[in-house]
Image (cartoon, rainbow, N blue to C red):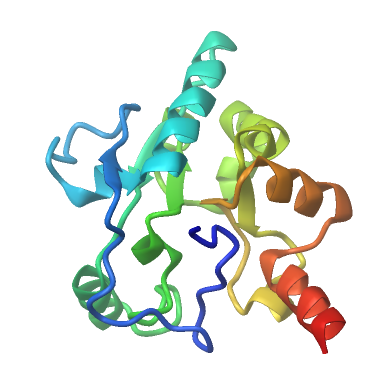
Length: 187
């Protein structure tokens, strides 16, 4: 069984050749400049299924939500990191996008930008409230930078399964805190 709770960061790196074996094209709106065969349009199969359900539910509520970036290879992450090594982009091997479980989202209300202002949009509020029902958490929440090592990113969603997403949301724990808590219990 695949570990959807896998922690990926500077201390828990993915190998350069890791690519999920079950990437699936995600059938949700992307900006028109993202070609239909671009790997950014892919997620692991289970995450893809649930993100499509989430986007469908958002659309029923008249929420304008766009996917910006899903899967990202180690090589692609290296290119992005070299362009912006000041910490705004994850170190190669330390990006959850490489797992195929992370998705950056935005809305036309913020010109499809990845910005903290997303939090205040209808789409941002909706994703924060209802994302866990589809297995997605806001991976880098506000006031948790000292724990995650990543500044607040209201646009960065991570699939962790419905049960874990609801647990983390109800307890206010980050995925990092979950790992710390349960690794101490195993000792």
